[in-house]
Every structure is written in C-alpha cells, then in structure tokens.
Amino acid sequence: MSLRARDGLAVLLLVLALASTLWTLPGTLRFLSSQHSAYADLTREQPNVVPQFQGLLPLDTERFFAARLRRGERYYLQVAPGRYFTGVDLPTAVRAFGRFLLLPAIAVTDPRQAEVILSVGADPRTLGVRLGRVERLAGRAASVARVRR
Image (cartoon, rainbow, N blue to C red; front, side):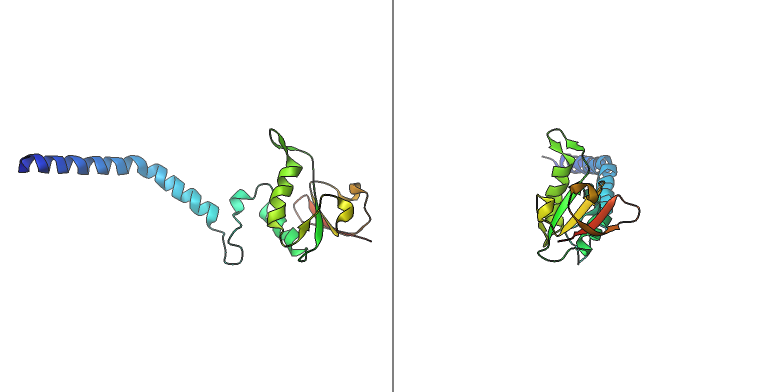
C-alpha cells in the first residue's frame, strides 16, 4: 500500500471516529446525566439506597419507618390494595422490597405477631389489633403504630 493510500485511509478512519463520537454524544450525555441524577444522593451511611428506584417505598417513608424500628423488632407492613404489575399485587411487591430496606427489623406476615405496624396508604386501626399511639409522616399516607400487648 502506498504512503498516500495509507494517509488517506488514516484520515478516513479519523473522520469516521469523529462522526461516530458526534453521533453518539447526545445519547451518552443523556445517559450520564440520568445516572448522576439517580445516584447523586448516595452517602457513606446509606450506600445502597438509590432514591430514584425507591418508588415502591419512597425514601422519606423508608427512613421514617427505619428510624422507629429497633434491631430484631417484629413489624407488619400494611399496604393499601393495588396492582404492581400483572400477577403481582402492590402489597406483595412493597413487602418484598421492605424486607430488605427495613433490616435488621424482622417482617412478619400476621399483624398479631407484630410489635409495630407500618402502614402505607392504609389505616392500621382496621387490622383488629390493639394499638398505642399512631405516628403519621407529614405529607405522606404513612404511619407507625406500636402494638399494645
């Protein structure tokens, strides 16, 4: 291959690389921006909490609940009926995520076994267990109630 042909090929490859970069740059910047938005609130204290993906149990609700639970305490997570996606109801989905988010407290499936009732979009007084004071999260349909024994 002649020197002129090699130089021409090098220029052509450089032009293609530049065109490819310019073609993909807007999408790349959108992706990087969305990643920054999703992960900007991570902290050393809560490195596994990604607010953008906490739709089932909003971050402020999760923090409200977690601050009122003690290690090993048994809780029942009451969630208003609804559909998450075909085949999975909202209460089941929220409880599945809640089991991880609310560790080291212990989720129970029967409110009569709980020491604390955590409610999202529902009234804990409808569960038929004796409750103490019910504390509500301002601006959210969420509450924490201690079960009286």
